Amino acid sequence: MIEIGPLQLVLCLIFVVVAGTGSVVLRLGLERDLAWGTVRTFAQLFLVGYVLKFVFQISHPVLVLLVFAFMIFWAAHAVRGRVKEKQVRLFLPTFVSMLVSYTAVAWVVTAVIVQVDPWYKPQYFIPLGGMIAGNSMNAITLALERLFADLRDGRARVELALSLGATYQEATAPMVRQAIRTGMIPSINALMTVGLVSLPGMMTGQILAGSDPVVAIEYQIVVMLMLVASTAIGSTIVVHVVRRTCFTRSSQLILR
Amino acid sequence: MTTIDWTPLLAHLDRPSALWPKKIELDDVGLQFEGKPPLFAGLNLTIDSGDFILIQGPSGSGKSSLLRLLNRLQDPTTGDVLVDGASTAEGDITRLRRALAWVQQTPVVIDGSVADNLTWAFGFDIAKRKSPPDRETLRGWLDAVLMEDVALDDDASVLSVGQQQRLSIVRALLTGPTLLLCDEPTSALDDASREIVQDWLERVNIEKGIGVVMVTHLPFTPRRARVRRLLLEAGSLIEQQSERGAEA
Image 1 (cartoon, chains in turn blue, green):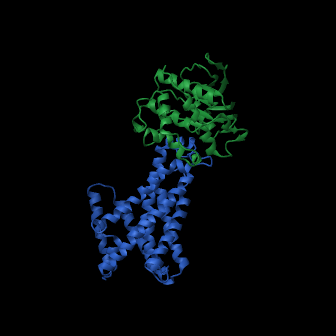
Image 2 (tube, each protein chain N blue to C red):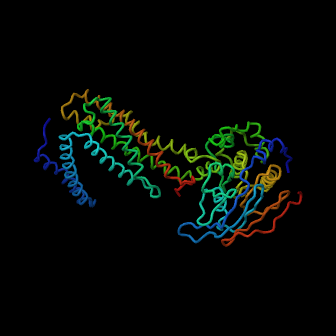
Image 3 (cartoon, rainbow over the protein chains, first blue to last red):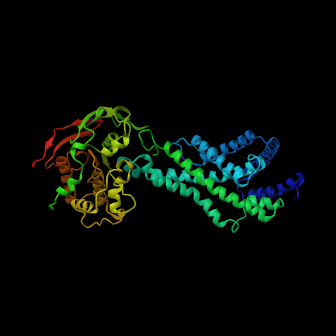
């Protein structure tokens, strides 16, 4: 594989300059954001690069899991930020559900399917785990937005069910089903279009790194199916846990 | 008015001996929503099972909220709501709500047929040992509220608001409640339908001992039942003289 050196990276700034010039000429007002974004890209990725290098050298399970927990923390934080619902406590239930379900799925992939030895070998566990967290984060955001929208719209129906003797679980069962479906649809669509519409990033990376394309697609298949499981498990658990926080102890819907 | 044979319909409903709770009390109840002036304060009221209560008052006086306090869809800001002497904040809220069937001001129907709507509440865990009424019984109920032209398999969402109101009342009654909490149950009905629904609320009250708490802004002249009239106005609840129907 051809390595990229400092000179090439500097050369890449041409792209930013092109975009920046466009912004000035067309008065888009994006120059500041573009410059700051470029600085952050360099800084964050270099930082991650050195942290990962360190983690790979130590290769200790506690350290690997800590890094994974850190990634999930930021994923949960992003979900909290993107879901526009301020009446309900969201962060902690989301974080804990994501941590439990994603660690389990990542473990199954490395230990049982790919059979990495040891299972926490960071070269495998961290990128695979990162893809799980990144993809399911979108699924969970979609699922929660749908859940809150449906609970608000369906408030009268929920209260009717409660007043006829339904538990809050029974009263919200159709909303919960719809929320989980909404979260899962993108990863199911991805199963339909993968390879036709886009070449996934990981597969592209492997091919660039000199892998046999057939080896690369085999990994990609593992990843695709792993993502179906993690979005399903993740959004199911999060939606159920968050639904509980939408009701008081006397089964009153909090959302207004 | 059409003559209706009530006997088979009423026979399906639970007998008064099965009724719980015996008594519901508002104990010094106040309610205030965030950022608004208090709706009311210091309300006291005792509802015995079998009472027929009419709550009237200007709009915005909190009549609907009062009903929601009774089945604890709403917590009081001050005071408490007691069921047979115990706070409704404790105890089995699902059972309580089942016993106090609430009929919303704006009727809500679920996706599905008229029959699906009428038997919906039998699908909940609390009713797992009860079998839903058969189609003949459901048919009889629809006829009894002047919905002869509506089929059990019709899509419920295409019914008129007035028909959905009647559907909602029948749906609530079929669950076998102790008390019906009705929020403007006849607001979208024509005179004939309103008369039949009111007559029929009085019948279940007299013949089955089912209590009725009804919020309405429409005139109501009882035929048979003994009706307690309450006026909710300017934050307080005033009990007016009770009234017995002329045909009693």
